[in-house]
Image 1: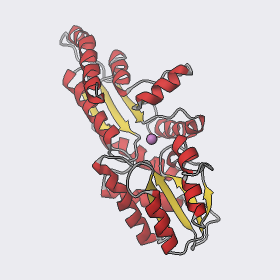
Image 2: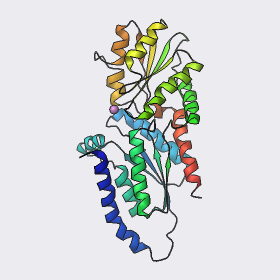
Image 3: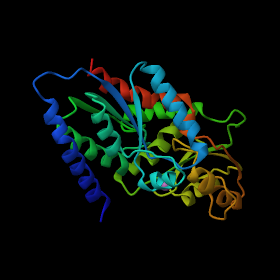
Image 4: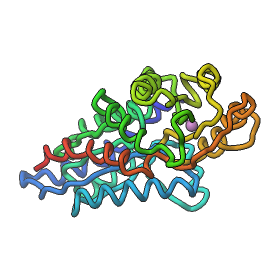
Length: 293
Ligand code: CO
């Protein structure tokens, strides 16, 4: 069974469970307004990722005091892994169903993804499913980190401000994005282009999409670069950062670039650990939230 079918079934089930509820409470009196924020991340089972999530959580709560904040993870695999450790994380469907139960009337669903890829578009489907149930008076979405040209310009600033202090001009800064089969993958190369207009030794590659690490290696070699800082371009420094980027495994970015004569300095810090990046996500909540006032 494919994921979308499962998702549709989940939304339909949630509808059946809560439709009656909706009817029962609809005796003409308008429900008291209750505004909430649902933060939706891909999720991570790594303990090292928690610092990123905590940082976002506290920034959101400080920016919107008094607005309850809930969390959901889109990754089924991560949720299953965590459940085995006794940590129960909700899917967006379950989190929204719970918020219906808690009588929230106005909710902003904020994507904490990096690009508007497959996970984000699945989230749109979930949200529109809940919208059509009609129990929430308003359900609005906040876009991921990098969804518009304006976002990209802010990401460029955030990336430039995240350069390790000791880095010299002739040393490379290499961002490792996740990458995807989704057309939104094009944002990674577009980001590299815009970063290089500001700093020609900035590179952006991906683990599972384009540009691949082999291309990044060629570009570094062409410029005669001997030293590179490797930074995850993902909200958390989780599994990919530790294994695919910084490990000593032979196919890690560190190993591949080191074999090409480039000295590598991995920085295990997710984008959500830097305030400049987090501000972009937090700002994406402001416009949808302002519609509720
Ligand atoms: Co992955």
